[in-house]
Amino acid sequence: MQTPVDPTKTEAWHKLSALHDAFVPDLRGAFDADPQRAEKYSFTAAELFVDLSKNLIDGAVLKALVDLADEVGVPAHRDAMFAGERINVTENRSVLHTALRRPKGDVLEVDGVNVVEQVHEVLDAMYAFADRVRSGEWVGVTGKKITTVINIGIGGSDLGPVMVYEALKPYVEPGLEARFISNIDPTDVAETTKGVDPETALFIVASKTFTTLETLTNARMAREWLLDALTESGAIDGSEAQRADAVSKHFVAVSTALDKVEAFGIDPANAFGFWNWVGGRYSVDSAVGLPLVITLGPDNFQNLLEGFHAMDEHFATAPSAQNVPLLMGMLNIWYVNFFKATSHAVLPYSQYLHRFAAYLQQLTMESNGKGVRLDGSPVVTETGEVFWGEPGTNGQHAFYQLIHQGTQLIPCDFIAVANPAHPLKDGDADVHELFLANFFAQTKALAFGKTADEVRAEGTAEEIVPARVFVGNRPTTSIMAPALTPSVVGQLIALYEHITFVQGSVWGIDSFDQWGVELGKQLALQIAPAVAGDAAALEAQDGSTKSLVGYYLAHRV
Ligand code: F6P
Image (cartoon, rainbow, N blue to C red; front, side):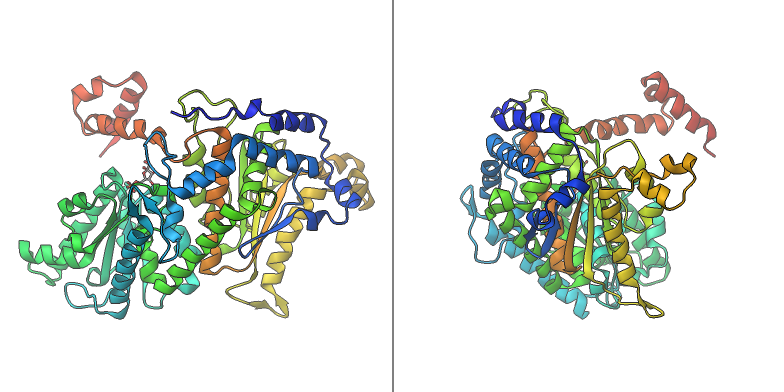
């Protein structure tokens, strides 16, 4: 296996260490000294305007970060990813989510196959299927048009579609809705199917592997729910033939394992495939996006893909010093490895992006939560910060206190759009403008703070002055776009995919495997018999597990 460059042994790392040791954060001073600072550190990527000027950087730091990316080979690693090399070494796979959004007619041969052609074959099939559902040509077992699409999946087979569905709600076709079941907690199936008419429901079982316990369990429960309800209402007579007919009209699947789909009882003609070179957390733009294609329509999904592609093009071709994903990824390296930041907040000033942080948590943390490098040796630096966030302004009234005045350095990304989906007014006041004023105010407060003298000048009693001082120099990146269109959502997702990639490249880790989730899955299967009351299985557990399962067994009614 290839031995990655040790970033800490590079010239640029040494330079960054020295710069960090001498660095005195002073954003007020930096802006006063350089009236061009905002312009100098603002960049454009596709339609995104990205202002890095309120980060703890100067020209020397930014140059050293770009040099570090070069020295560890980020651009070469990026090119290898785009070319389809097997950079996912622990699974011996190519990493080609970028091929999912390449335009029709492009050619990218991997192992002698033009993968772009394969991608478009599936997209065309998805679009044709979605058109049938949307037009009412595809009907349920009683001839009724589909109105509710229920996606059953978890992790990458859930978070991407949920997040984008929520983000693009204004684009949802009237008369259609999507719902999402992910958790094996039976509450999820029970609550999500509440109020749904089985005759107008279409279930999409989405699982890359089609082995995931949660998804298959939920799919079986949903199938029973559907068949029981249809039988009870007399819509079907409950015979095997009618049950199979109902399943074929109300269940479709998305997977890389089409043989397993068939074994589950879903007609392979109603299954949409993808490939093992698409990581689960990178799959919303594959067939996993089927609930989006149906509810938003093929044109909007196509625009989403075009947004992804525009950001890919930027990442693949922009010079490093203007390459936004590269710069943002390297800034994260600066904060994690030099300032020892352990978390990163993403704060969208858009209620429609209320699941964006949850989505990013899988993308970033499943990718970069790694302790060994590509050659199996231990990592040489901190990796994988915690990503988290909530939409503004809600977060302002909850956790921003800690970001403003706590003792931890938490770099934040603020995201906003110029044009709202709903230009509502409060009397004469444009509410979106009020919302944006908060967006602008927060990064200003975090950067420039408030001095003791400024607090005193407001007439504050001396003993409370310290509590009301804001030290400032809290780093933020502001990202703005014209509006939250499908294309912009695609651009934002691809931006964070590539930021994640850049960080993983510097750390020399495999950002595309996720072995860390396996142990818990295996143990759950081992423990399940004990929970069901098998005394020998219970006896084989450790003391704490025995005690906890014992509590359950004693208290279940
Ligand atoms: O267990 C983690 C994981 O493999 C994720 O990487 C993935 O997105 C999720 O489970 C769901 O997997 P699948 O799509 O194969 O059901």
